[in-house]
Image 1 (cartoon, rainbow, N blue to C red):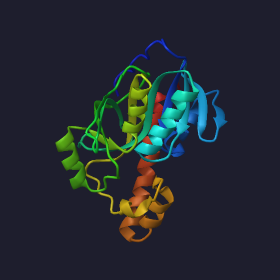
Image 2 (cartoon, rainbow, N blue to C red):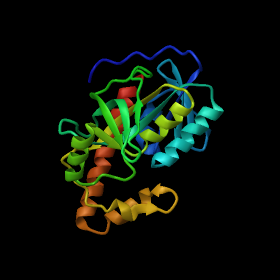
Image 3 (tube, rainbow, N blue to C red):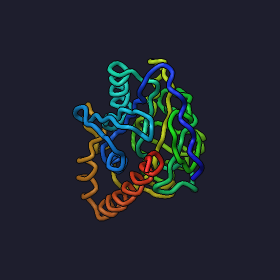
Image 4 (tube, rainbow, N blue to C red):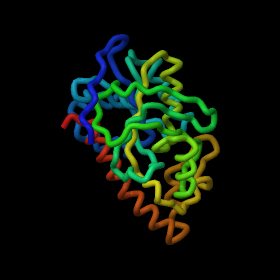
Length: 242
């Protein structure tokens, strides 16, 4: 990993807002940081080093991420917004547990591009590059390769554009920090489209249930569980003060 980037000094606010999709993405980070306070359901505050932050768990997908990020903007005095959590690799030299610091976010559906302020938070990262935000999970290695070639992005997620749009509307700097769960060569046999709920995006419980439909799916779930633990640990190490 490279050396940490210095955090920018606060100017227009006192807190950095952070948005993750699921609690398990940030559980190791919350466990290792001191003075974590629970402000409400899925909402935490703590010092990241010397930086005061507020962290919200939004659920999966760009709409949930945007809604929760907007709530942070409206309810806290923020000097920036960050999306953090898991992503899939679109290039071969990223492996589970590697940390990507995005220099821009590309939204596949709208073709919007969002600039990232890479010095907003101190972070130890593996690679910098573009992050692609898609509406659905990317399961096959072939689809990952095609997306990487077409977009020039090095990793893919489902939430970053929502937080980026909330930051843009709020006139705030934005950054994206993602830890890799699956390599570009790894295909996942689970049919993620069958795991969607009508109004709330992808359901983690439905993913598990769909995985148990086949032996290949069970193997994929087992592999994803291990790589998710590595990814969460990598994220904590990249951001943690310890």
